[in-house]
Amino acid sequence: MTIKPREKFDNDDDPVESMLKKAGCLELHYKVQECIATTKDWRKCQSEVNDFKDCITKHKQEEMAKLNR
Image 1 (tube, rainbow, N blue to C red):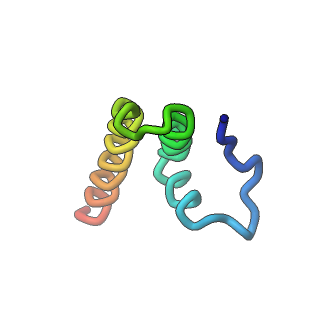
Image 2: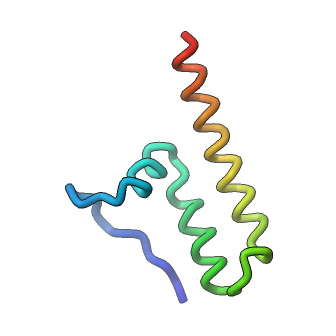
């Protein structure tokens, strides 16, 4: 089963998807979802989960750096 991202973001955006897109982590989020859907076991998706986590962490650090300027 492949989870496909929405083709177009309109006024009915999912707020989580909007935030992840802004952070540049949306595709990694989809990879985590697809892995879990395929394997039926999140523990087998640690590479995808860690990539997603690293992306979110990097975005948070960049946002904090902007606030501290």
